[in-house]
Image (cartoon, rainbow, N blue to C red; front, top):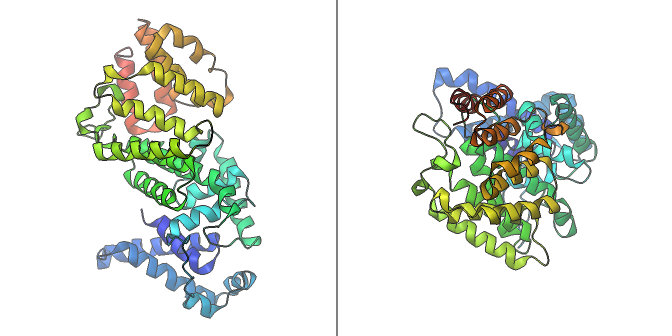
Length: 403
């Protein structure tokens, strides 16, 4: 939980995300060695940050490699020991995590590298988890991360929140990163937990801060609205033992009405600031709003959701959007109307190992009374997911023939 904050805080000092990540890892190792004997400190985050910073000073003084890196970025050892205060301006924002996002989303990196590196450093995701989010091989993600860190170091990219046109140029990648971090927290790709609340909280906090920083950007408000709506369901998405609870089975009395209200406000701002057609995040927020406004699952406005997904597919086409559109069509027009849409996606390379494709197909087959086919689809979906909770859910559905 503290790893991204330590990286961000140390990056402010050493101005090199590669070195900062190494120092943060050193601090975590020190904690594993010392805390079992001395006890966990009252403020673990502060302990980790102090340890990482102290090691930065020690290593700079003792190792020529660190001295060389600092020379490359125009800083000496005294600057590391006592970094100067940065001037505050009306557009300045004192948030190292957000600085880290904008730094790793610098235009010198490709869009894929920006997102992968930020997810690794800010979200603390493994290369496997990032690969799952991108639907690409792990080796590809690992290469992107290594090259991205090298590029930032050699190009002397400043650790800052940019101003003016530069800020707008990086905004799309920043929004994508925040969105993917939230998604990993909302539905973990691997591990024993269905939710990773800390990731959701970091992503939502960053989105809110960004909304205050860029009040005239509709997609910033659109993303914030989407995350508010999604976060409002968190308490209802797991059962007493941590097992997943599907949307149709959730107790909507447990949905957080304050977060829903915040989502409505953010969506209203997105619509008010938009100069033309709504962007992808505003459209997704509008879809989430349809769910939020339905006090019972049966009251969901599925025809409107299907229409919004059609608009989203035109605005930001992707196989995953098409899969979600098929789900909405199945609810608005019936499973028979949606099955051909899903079948058309079975040969798409990006979805070949995407567990939600057979899961959706299994659900449609079950609703059509084709139980044995549905069972096979849910078993295939269970074999593809690496989240233990999700696997249990899919195997239960397989055993019941999709029910």
